[in-house]
Length: 264
Image 1: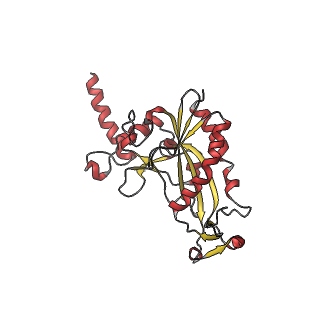
Image 2: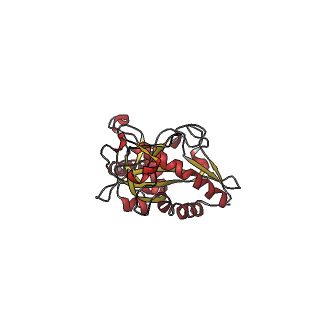
Image 3: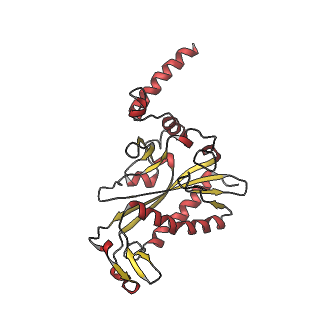
């Protein structure tokens, strides 16, 4: 039987080698574009959705081989937008959830942004299948494979068609990968991830992501769970709930005082 710590250690060891697999000696992405049956190569843009999906396609066969080497089964979700991206199962039926998360970074030491999945739905209703193949509580851990990269602006390149013999002329649209594996709760912040969506946001500092030093890292997974399972956006709460860690502390203090009175 494999426990969560052992699984994370094995996965992190596996993922640390992916940088060399996906980059050339010049630190450029190995992907140059799409090819058709006539051997025409269509260059791509650095659109984050396109880039992240291609990276996932490249990594899934390698993660399947990783599963086989470690006597695990790898299951892909049965429907689009189901959580998680990958489910690993050991011979005893223990489940480990893994999500791909990607973002780009610049010279500030911070990423552009990253969401860590919904704090609604399956995250709150943890004992039923809601946009999942297994209940959230069925998993021993919930890990993130983080994929960070630099964007390379290529003016006009996305309008061209190349021959396969011209691959060296195509500049990769991303470069300088940083990979990491961390539990979701260790890289989470106390902010939503994007716009009006009900998604947990990550911390933005690269070193905190790589080292698992998010907002809840020292507070513990139980605090992360309690905070996000009871979180309401300003719109949802209409001023009656908390919306960041400071107001969460006030919320906890109020309830602690009430519980103290009930005990007497």
